[in-house]
Length: 67
Image (cartoon, rainbow, N blue to C red; front, side):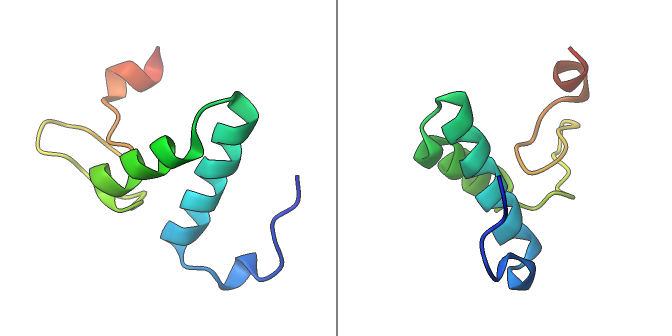
């Protein structure tokens, strides 16, 4: 799956949201739900750190991500 024209000009959060939505479609998950979670959890900030140790755009606990 190729990135859309102009993808390189998007901001990092926009690129991450695009990739998340595309992955959701392939996986059969509602892309709007995935987008809403990314926006709510971190604004699609891949470097986000939560108060309880959550990390990344979707604020996953390291122990969950390792599973």
